[in-house]
Amino acid sequence: MAALGKCFDPTGARHGIPTYLWRCAPDGLATRRQLRARGLRPGGQQVAAQLLRPRYRRGPLVAYLYRLDKAKLVRPMTPAKRRALACAMRARRTCPQCRMDAGYVIPASLGVCVPCVYPDDQCAA
Image (cartoon, rainbow, N blue to C red):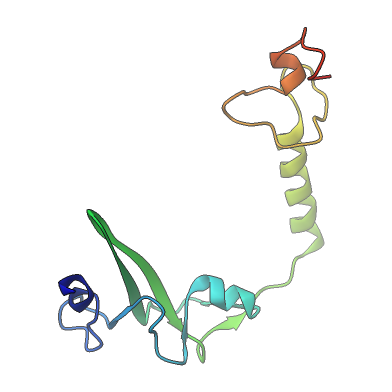
């Protein structure tokens, strides 16, 4: 497969940074999601490498890798940040038309809660 050869460049000669195939990264490197699962964050460090996954008829999927030894702990949630997130989530659940808490995040495609969209429907109530 020629596409796999284009996605493997551990020296960084072709892509500018070391590039590995999907699921073939060396130890000591992790994606943002993998860092977060360990309770870490990149902490301002530069991207150390990248993963490429070839796709049919489209460009490859890219995932950036960060060094584990330079990663920092995730900042703890402060009470002010917790209040701000609760306020934002409450705003996403509040219907702009009837001003009621819908109990779910109102879809952007509707813009209002389901009972406001279908007021005569018996199933919506």
